[in-house]
Length: 530
Image 1 (cartoon, helix red, strand yellow):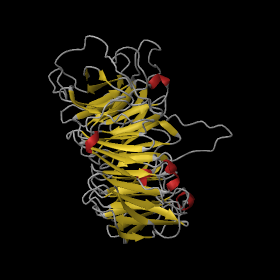
Image 2: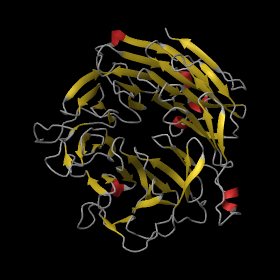
Image 3: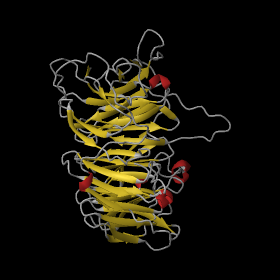
Image 4: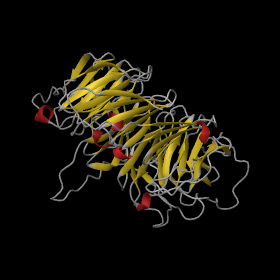
């Protein structure tokens, strides 16, 4: 394990999607560093009138721009062009937006209004605004399930609802005009998504309804309709399959060939795309029996600073073990089923987690249809992230005070999950829970971006000094990192500093005259900014 020198950070510090830059939001500026040298690449001055709590800080898809959103404004800055600064003002009558994110390109920003009133799409290239009424999913946790951008053409598929009916619309990539819209045969759809190749649009029903996943062509024609798993030959009258819970999660493989469907049972159904024929049925066992092809790793009952070890270790089970199932009181409703499923970048491994066993991670080998590994923790696992470029490499985080500065990395050849303790890596006392994410580095060994809201660094999983690192350390740090100030996530102080490019800013307002109640007609309006 190799660590870079510590760098100044804040509660808003993120690596770029291409893994080459790190952006940190400070009270008066945005500091952009190059990963290779760890030196400041560019400093972007913030407008002196930028006030209020920061609600979003994001990189654009192509790593050329950064977005800063406050309560009533969205600012877009270029990391390559010092003359570009775009601003979209949100009227006070709309109140705080529920979610802000980039669209399909670096110049497109999507703003979801409270209560699903409208979705506003801002184009910072031509200064145009498109408003679409009644997006069905508008909270930060669910908004991305209700819209999907086609990878090849940037067409937008959007799920809306009015007068108790779901509607799907396909929008042009250039103007966002409606090219096609239809009412899907769903009662309460909970998500949609394009396959990676852009040939198919997958729509799934709510878990409160009967299990159903519909596959549409790119022009909106229903092609296949999956209505739940078929009974097995040895159990043709399985009541659990006929009257079980509906779809809880749908995951599309990166290669576009597979669709994983989870419901309230302990099974994961792997369907072939586009035939929607069940290819595999993966069942989580109540008792796990170790064998040559299955690794079972159990966390040792030693927590940080509570004994001889400074971080948890893992031992491989040699006999049958049972996952730690959730114990409910008489007042709690029973929970069950898979609430997380995600493919790695090669589509060969699938990581799952059961809601009634949140401290256990199951790793499935899709080509062989076998359970590859079971990782058992003493705490609930709250973050699972596959490496975006290197297959079979998983990053995990657990909840709880004892795990605040711990990160775990796993791959099939490692001796259990690898614990990364940042307590002694950051200078001084840790200022908060460590945030960790994979760095999209091209080096042989994977790298992780780490920050504790005051300091950030990069950790490489390199095992020897001869391996190439994503960065070049010219010198070792000789003292603690000095900080100019931090930004509160909820209520940021006034960010006062002169703006070097204020005169070249693009400013336009998000219109606020939409006050009518949602009706049965799909409403669509377009405004040209001034």
